[in-house]
Length: 202
Image (cartoon, rainbow, N blue to C red; front, side, top):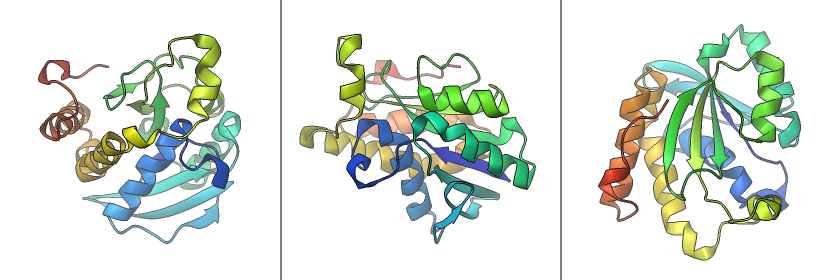
């Protein structure tokens, strides 16, 4: 079984925040693949079902971002899921809006959700980095990620979430680079991005 984790903050006030891009991605996957219902489990909300040929547990930690690892650790212990079978979807300020990169391990770039997960289960899980852009000043980052996507951003957000959900089977079978490139090409076809920005980065 794979564990697909979306990072975000629980509660209605955070639903549309840039920091909740991970929640949005995993919710889109559940909807597209008919997985549900969501139930309160593992200090969060979880549901499980098939994603292509693979059975997956989808998890939205109910803790706040900086305690995300607690929920992830509970789920991995219960199902004995190795760290290499954990895929975390999260917002990434160091990527341009609408860009996506997949990597295994590496640094946490100041992301409190990743820091918490690494502290609980180790660092060698896979990350799907969802670009939300940078406000241009590090002092503005917290306010930026804890604000909603602007109305003008919604078209690319919806397109990216849809492409993630459409192509996630590639990710679950280990074809990370192909998944990344398929998402990129779908964004280009939808008028979001340039063909020169493609390619896999690990």
